[in-house]
Image: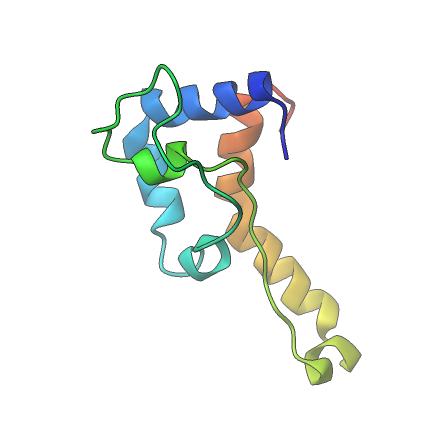
Length: 105
């Protein structure tokens, strides 16, 4: 889980550009990789509007994505292709987080 300063930077980026965040997390290919991931606060974090349209994301204690591979996929010589495809799908999400944290992308 990120520390509070890091989490605040991500939350602030979501507040500053909720449209970009929504396009990323609602993307048809990416949404299943993000949905339901991680712990959330019961209430809005201190300093954030409980009526914000992305409040459920602001309540998250962290942001991550995942993809599941079957045993057959893991044992396949094509595993790397599937992995790279998942990384490309998640790239806009990762870029948003990197930019929120002022990290190189």
